[in-house]
Image (cartoon, rainbow, N blue to C red; front, side, top):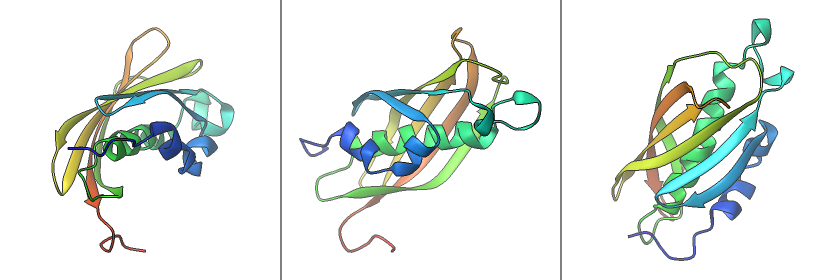
Length: 141
């Protein structure tokens, strides 16, 4: 069972890379984390298409927050140990919107799924990640 008092906004603030890529957190609860990221030229590959790495980093940001909010008692952090992305369409403008939900919450791993859609609600990407559960003393530094 997740410890009471975990705060998704504090988790987001503790991840400066999320702000660097332009991710914005809309809401964060253990059962669902929602955010968005605007298209910007610095997040693009050739042809003005949002870079797949930017989309993956966005999903990893939301996924990390979701996993953190679902940590079991005694754990204090997570680390992505696996990520699988399927891309469905290019993004050339507007925003992408991500919704992350836990698929499995265990003592040693948490699996989350992030659905990324464009402003019209069309599927852009689907990301499934496995996050390792880290407890004090077992985090690699």
